[in-house]
Structure formats: structure tokens, C-alpha cells
Image (spheres, rainbow, N blue to C red):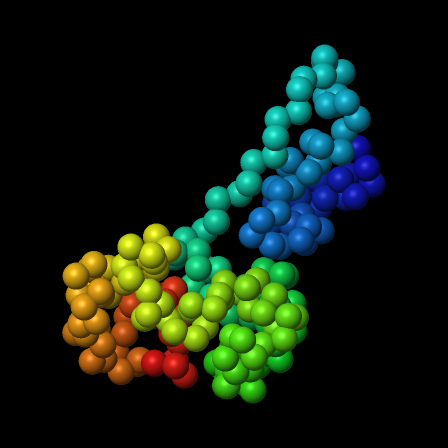
Length: 200
């Protein structure tokens, strides 16, 4: 067991498992702490001296979903700065946000740019935050229903669209609301489509 693993174990035993996580990256794609500690043991040895077993592939933690969508699918738009994974926080900083600007939902210079005008670094940061060219520029409005990603279809359905009214470019009652009138679930769905308070 490494010194770091021992420290994590002692902190977790003393102060709760959540505190031990401060020694790990907080990205959604990280391996759980238990898998990391197990993989650091030579040849899969067990602390009680029993025979080594084949190391299981580390399980990828399930991404937490709110209203049926991960934070990344919703572009982290409704996640406060203090709860952003490290990779998302770094990406937000790379495109000009600080904590106050993020939490206050401020309009930044980057919001005026089209996807094709973003630098490679800005595109990478935006992709880390869940954006792509379709969600950034067009909000998927120019895509046929059958070409939409599944999570976007699901969000559109929750907002009242189906294949017929999407492909025929019909408005739904949702389209008539002001941002403040949306429920948290509707806002989450709009985030998946690429809308947020300043683009609605």
C-alpha cells in the first residue's frame, strides 16, 4: 500500500469516505478510489496474504443524471462552480469564466463567436463542457429528427416535440415561454439542446 493510499484510507476512516476523495481528481470519468487503491497493490495481492486473483477491470462510475441527463449533456449550465468537476472548471477558465461569472451566468466574449471562429483551444474547452458545433451554433434546429443524438431527442420530446413536428419545424407551447417560466426540468432539457438564459 502506498503512502497516498494509506493516507486516503486513514482520512476516510476518520472523517468519512467523502473526505478521502479530495486526493483524487473529481472528473466524471475517473476510476473510483477503491479501484485505484486495489490496482496499486503488486500482482493483485490481498492484505490478508491470500492468493492473488486476477484484477478486475476498473468500473467506470455511473454519471449522475438530473431530470434524465448528465451534467455534461446539459453543458454544465445548471451546475454551480463549486460542484463542477475539475476538467469542467479548467475548461470554463480556458474560455474566460471565473467563479463569479459562471455562477452569475454572465455573457462572455466567446458567446458572440460562431463555432468555426473558435480557436482549437476554445473548441476543446467547449467540447469538455459538452458543446459541439450543432449545439453551439444551430441548437440542432437544422437537423432531421432521425439524425439527432438520442439524448437530444429525449430532451426535445420532454419539451413537446416529436418526429413530425420537429421535422416540419412546428413550434410547441414551450416555444412561447420566457426563460423564467420554465421548470428546472425544462431548463435542463433546453440546456441539452444548447439553449441557456442568454440564447433563449
